[in-house]
Structure formats: structure tokens, C-alpha cells
Image 1: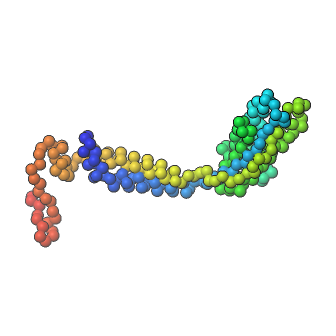
Image 2: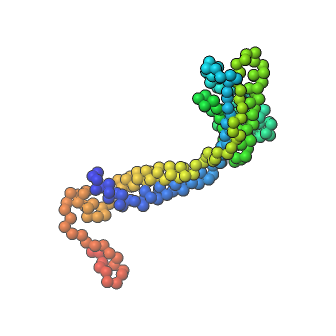
Image 3: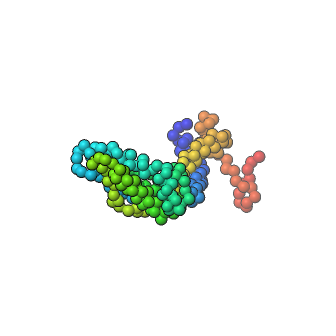
Length: 230
């Protein structure tokens, strides 16, 4: 096909492309509204060594992962769930609900909770997990025989960050884009399956003949119109 052929297809089948794109966008919007909304809350905790020593600082940075793993242990999350009366298992909380991010360069630990339907529960859960982490570290420091300890303190209480999913705008935009692409492909498929000659240009293109003239086909039932020759 030449460039002119592509332009002809677009002119002839533009409505197919727009229709498929619109249907896909509406479907994406409906899908987004049917999804369960998930809200995010974050709490920030400071992690610092007991004394400003370069070697201890390096140790503190490597130990932050251990602090995180202890706070996210299943028994600890079960305790937090029972404390808040969430009726949620630790496995459910660990499945993309509760997470922690260690930032050794900033000496910070971020507690992140993505909770469905209830933003207030997301905040309460983030605070509870963080405070439980503080308690775990206090116990470890009390049991440690070394003077090199790591302390965890609340820096920022849990705050509501926003809606995580669904992102309706992105879903609709993606649906529209995919729909337009699918509509474009469908337009060319329909054009390939259509073997009728509708215009003088079609005759010239497919038969290789120059069109000298065309007989207009008009309705014969209207006054003042010509009948089509048999």
C-alpha cells in the first residue's frame, strides 16, 4: 500500500477507530470504578547509633535491614493486627499491604501501609507497626551486652499520602490509547476484507485503468431525479 492508500483508509474508517477507542476508554473507566480503592499512609522513623563513630555508623547501616525484618516478622504483625482488631492475618498484611523502606544514607526508616477502603486504618496500622518496631529495638538494646546500640525513634507520625489505586486517569488514558491502536488495526482489516470499488480512485488503483467518467447512481423514487440505467 502507498501513502495515499493509508490516508484513504483513515478517511473512510475513521469512525471505526474513534468508536473502538471510545469503547475501550469507557471500559477502562468502568473497570477502575469497580476496583477496590487502596489508600496509602506513611510514617517516618529515625535510626541512629548510640555514639557518633564511623565504624558504628557502618554497622548501623547494615543492621537496618535486620530491624526491618524483625518488625515485619509474622508473629509481630499478628500481634499488631490483634491489637488493632483488624481480623487480618500476617500473610495478608505482608501481601503488598505493609512494607518498610530503609534509607541508610538518611538514617531513616519509612513504614508504608496500602490499605483497602479505609484511609484511617492505614494511618493507625502504620503507626502501630512503627511503634512495635521501636519496642522491639528497645528490648534488643536492653538485652545487648555491648555499648554499641542502635536506637529507633518516631520522626513523623503516620500521615495520609493519598489514593494508590485505582488511578482512573491513567487507566482511561491507557484504555483510549490501546483502543485507538486496536481500532486502527481493525480499520485496515475491514478495508482488506472489503473488495468493492466505491470511487473512481478505487477503479484506477485496482484495475489500472484511467477513469474517463462516472454515471451517478441516484434514487428513482424522488421527483426530478434520474433513474439508474438497467
